[in-house]
Length: 290
Image (cartoon, rainbow, N blue to C red; front, side, top):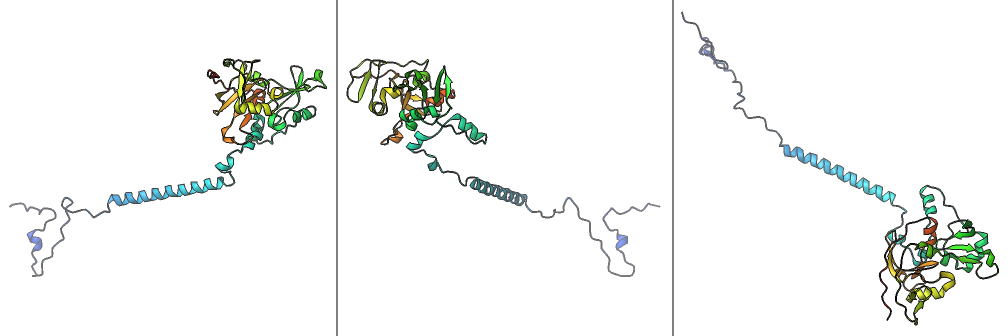
């Protein structure tokens, strides 16, 4: 007697399809085959990438707008670049001392320094603000002599010369400022209109520098020239046409041409008093005067 064989899975045997009552045969739905069935349709991945990109771009745009709003608010009340430009008179009158700058940065009101009573009359006689600048120290003693420092000079009291024009003198700040530097002298020449030779030091002065020297006190105020005229780069990077005198440094400012401030005096008093760096530009050989 042979054994009956079971039908394979998912298939219907002939016996199951036979209906003795004559009814319609009932069929069972086949189970899908994973190997042949197509997967459900999905949205392309590029749509998701597009959405992420749009979100990122929107976020960046919002950040830019916020940054512009913050910059605009913080910039309210600031002077424009044009307002920051100094007029020729401002170049003369500006107070540029390290003490005031340090106090401003520390949030402390800068100390106001006045001309000492002993030097008040001499301050006006020696040229005032235009020649000396603002006071940067109280009256003090230097090498046994009472002095007061100003932005462009140091005024000294000589009591042994009381009653003479030399009781108050401007110190030799030009000589002290260039100590250790050597300046080449030109060949001696004859003085002429607009060009003067000083045999006392071997240097000449001409042009606008000579005009300024003669109109603002001459020898009494500035002393003799101790260098020729040359281009010098300052420690802060600015470059000027300059000439050194015993008591001053003349600077040429072409941007102020046509005004009384085309020639200005360097802040040698401040540089010496505060120990600021000094220029080391080597003077070129002077051009021979024909």
